Length: 70
Image 1 (tube, rainbow, N blue to C red):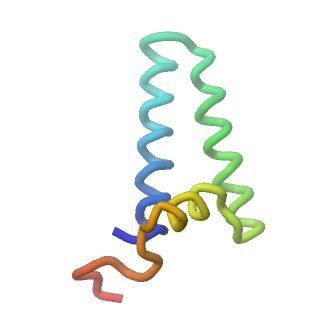
Image 2 (image 1 turned 90 degrees about the vertical axis):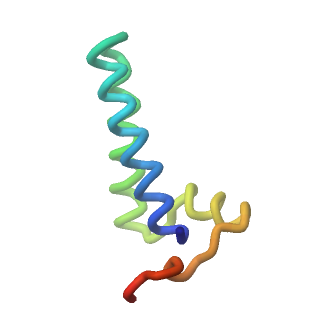
Image 3 (image 1 turned 90 degrees about the horizontal axis):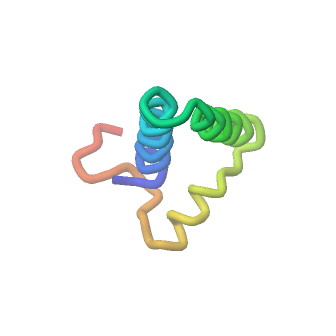
């Protein structure tokens, strides 16, 4: 899996997890969803993402993953 797919997977997981926590634990967890959405918007506008930088430093490959058709 490459950096872009990993970022999307992590963001989607965070959003679904925070929505479940907001529903079943405490409604204030919705603010975590807002935070993730704001970071996705910011990275789309500026073409910079902190999670991508962290993943690159951890050694996640940049290019398409194995078996990718791109």
